[in-house]
Amino acid sequence: MARVLTPRSEDFPRWYQELLAKAELADNGPVRGTMVIRPAGYAIWERMQSEMDERIKAAGAQNAYFPLLIPESYLRREAQHVEGFSPELAVVTHGGGKPLAEPVVVRPTSETVIGEYLAKWVSSYRDLPLLLNQWANVVRWELRPRLLLRTTEFLWQEGHTAHATQDDARRYARRILHDVYEDFMRTVLAMPVVAGRKTARERFAGATNTYTLEGMMGDGKALQMGTSHELGQNFAKAFDVVFSGRSGTREHAWTTSWGSSTRMLGGLIMCHGDDAGLRVPPRAAATQALVTVVKEGEGVPRAAARLRDELEAVGVRVALDDRVDTPFGRRAVDAELKGFPVRIEVGPRDLAAGNVVLVRRFDGTKTSVRVGAIVKTVVETLALDQQALYDAALARRDAGTVEVKTTDDAIAAAIAGKWARVPWSTMGAEGETKANGEGVTIRCLVRQDGTVPDAEDEPGLVAVVARAY
Image (cartoon, rainbow, N blue to C red; front, side):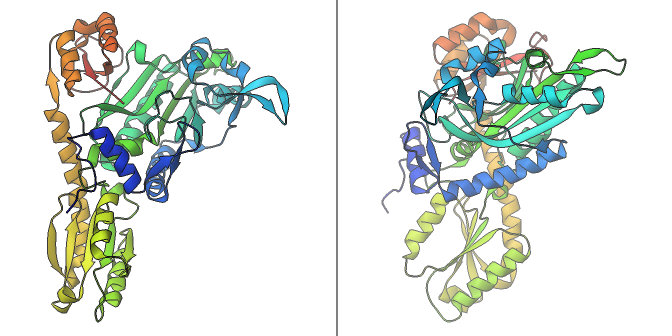
C-alpha cells in the first residue's frame, strides 16, 4: 500500500505538515502566519480547554474577558515589557477611516490592560488575592510561522493574579505550574514534561521569575508547553496597584501571570504521532472509540448502533462510522490519520460468529472480541493505552537525554538531536551566550533530583540544554 505520510525519520517537518493537512487538523490562514483550526483539530483543543478550565477553577481563579485592543501607552508603562514585545506588536493606527488619536496594540498578552483594572478593583488586603483567567486570542507578529507552534494569531488562556505578599504570589505561581499545567500535561496529554526555572535571559519580559514546562518532541527538539511567571511588583508599580494592608499602610500588590496555548496541540501531535498519523491519548480525544460498519450485512448497522449507545452509556466518547458507500480501507486509513484511540470494526462475518474486531491505535493490534465483552474491553484498553503513550514518550525522552560536563559537549549533543544535562555552574551566562550562537538554548534549570529550584543561584543546579521549536 502506498504510504500516506512522509516517514518521520526521513523528514520530520514535512511529516508534520502533511499530517496537519491529511488529518484535517489545521490549515494556513489568508494572512501570512495566521491559521485555520479545522473541526478535527478544534475538537481536541476543546477537550484541552475543558480539562484545563476545570483545573484552573479548582485553583480558585475565575474566568473574565478583557479587550483585544490595548492603548499603546499602556505597554510603555513597563519598560522591560514593551522592550520585550516591541518586535512582535501589531499596531492599529486608523479606525473608521480616520487616524486614531493614540495608536492601539492588538493584544500580545494582557498584563498591561489587566494591570489597569486591578488598580481599579483592588483597594484593601480584603480584596486579595484576586485570581483571574481569560480564554482569548493574541497576536504576535511571527517572522518564521509554523502551524500550531508559532503563528501570528493563536488561542490561549492567560491567568493574572494579585496577592498581598511575595510568598503568596510565589506559591500560587508554583501551584499553577504543578497542579494545573504539569498535572494536565502528564495525565491528559500523556507527556512527561520537565518542570523547571528559566534563566534570566529566557525570562518573560517584565517578570522576576519564569517557570516552564518543556516537552520532548519526536525529533528530539524541545517545545515550551506552558509558563507561569512571578511578576514581583513591577506591573503593580507601573499601574499603581496598591492596597491598604492590615496595619493601614499602603502597599503595592505582588502579581503573577501564566499561560498555555494551542501550541500544546502541536506538541501533542509531534510527541505521539507516528508514520501512520496522529495518536491521541484517550483522555484528550474528542472521539475515544469509533464504531465502524465494515460493510452491509444482516443486523450489522443495528448492532453497530447498539454498541455505540452502550459505549456512550458508560461515558466513552464514541462516534459511529456507517458510511458504507465509502471504501472501508479509505475509512480505516482516515481513522488512523486522525488518531482515534480505538476502533471497533463490525462486519457481517465476525458478527455472525458473535464477535467484533478491536483495533488499538497505540500499536495497531487487532483483536477479535465477543460482542458481550466489547464495552468492558474498550474501557480497559483506553486506560492501558493512556499509560502506554506516556510510558513510550518517557522512554524516548530518557533515551534522548545525556549527562555532559562541558558547554561544548552540551551544544554538540543538542545539535545531534538530544537533550543535554550539564552543571549550571559550569555553563553559566557565558556558556548560554555561546549556545545561543549555535541555535541551542537552555530550556530550564532544575535541581539534581529534577525538582524546580527556588533561585537561579542555588548550588548544584543542572541546565537542560536543547534545540527547540
